[in-house]
Image (tube, rainbow, N blue to C red):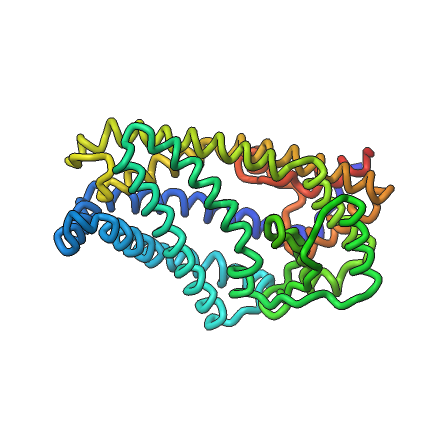
Length: 373
């Protein structure tokens, strides 16, 4: 027997995935080009010098903050059409989004303001470390980056996510009771179970743990609650519990710490070797920030396949826990099938695409592995 003929929905998923892969390449090339032009045209140095002349050397931290905010806004403006096409036009075309342009643009502006605020804080601290300890800044920057990520994860469900979606406690019932019992048996303390209002903006479904420590909560999208059985939802959550039981958060923090350390150290070497050649007297001159960002950008691209490989292994391990916990692979496999259909996921991407770009194994491989257990 030959391979089964793909359904119309599966063909659409393959087409959608191929377009996103091409857009990813375009985005990489565009970001690299923008950084190069910004640095080598002298525009970055002009902005840095202009702000420094305005605020004075004593207020260097104001210069750095203003430079970062202006730069993030400028890059977002240059990338606007690509963002508009990839996150609005394409999603509407494939009927994954029901957002109007006004709703999308409102979310875009909110995301941009958050990005500006977070980038300004992050770069202000990093460039202060560059100034105060030019030989060891990369070590302390790595520590700050991890702490920054932890604090951000803690605030995510309380401050950031409610800006984009409505969250309300899931009403009492069999599902809520079963979910809380599963958490109790696993020794996981959660702040509550919440319904994630997604159907007003998207047709996709999702479920997740959000937050850290006392802010940890379970969020189930309304699109999931209306289209999936209790057994399928519990199987999805059992997968998330698997991450907890397998200590994947600690593993992720360790991996992120190592990558941050390597990335910042490579940036240190690049700044030390090249900033002077570009006419900057000190490595802490914010005008050389595009060089710093480019080195991190390239490192993230090179390290991404290896980080993704580690992530895919942890996903398989969490799947195995879910099957063991529920006693059968049927509910998890059924949920995978529905999620692929609803979210328009390509079940079998090319092996090289999965290796390079995917943090999760393909749906086809997950289903095959699950059925083998």
